[in-house]
Length: 391
Ligand code: SF4
Image (cartoon, rainbow, N blue to C red; front, side, top):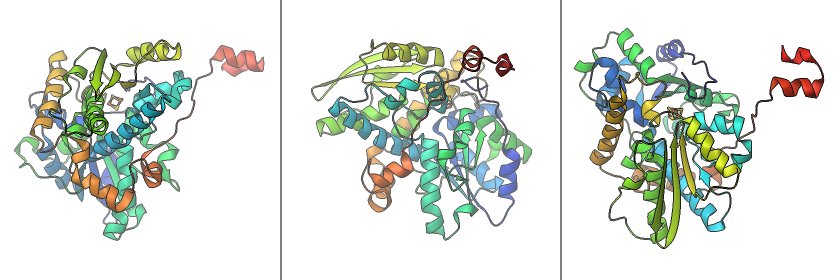
């Protein structure tokens, strides 16, 4: 179930199959980092076994015109969110900065801690950055109408379905992300099409949006967003190339971890949280003025997206650990490990987005939040004086 407890996931498999069968539509997939270490378990592979190549082959056989990697957009998120953090830190404003890539956490903050919304990064999640960018760039590049480009997300997550339906992530009513499938739903589609997943020859992803760095891929594990942002911010602060990209201080399994780092003469106080009970505890600290953190990463699911509600249910805790370990192994095997080194992202800024945090980047890659604080039945009665309000 959804970590917020508020969502009833609805499958969009039929709509995706209809789009795939429609010759007037160009249908592209974006695959979130954590899916590559989860999908194999649906086909009896060991937990954590990375299967991105076979997944790409399966998606092509299902009829997708291109298979891209949400990791590309995670790299964009690192750069936009890292720059935002450095700007806030320099001004001493709106700190601590909370991450905003988890829609389960964002919705929880909107409902339970609206006073903290100015502290949330204004960055869209990688899923939504990908959708808005691709819907803006591909139609012109391929000479097709926006309405004929269908973006399907493959996510570890049921909260992403709600996120894709938010009205702010649409242009004239046309969503940036059309449909969201979970890891388990993709496995059912592969089975339903009669594909023998384990016999598929791995295929490569499509460029340029299929290229990501290790910084983007570790977004799928708790602590990964913080580490990816540190790989960006540390080079910005010091003006020097990092000797090592590993920030082991922010890794780990505990649901509430703290780390203090000295970077270029600055002290950075960090908190990494997974699970909404832990998020509530930290948020209450910040509201009470008892927090000294500069940056707080929150992921709603246990272990982060590798433990998302759309992933296969892990047999035991060891399965979750193997997924995390293999995601960090993917980082090791990727050719690049810092978002700022992604040459396709750099090209995207040079030719299309303009400056990091600039006007166009803001309109396509950032968002705003709104209070969704729930009013209790008792409050409604007090306000209206009408007991029928509770019915
Ligand atoms: Fe979705 Fe990841 Fe957040 Fe879980 S932690 S709700 S899988 S974005």
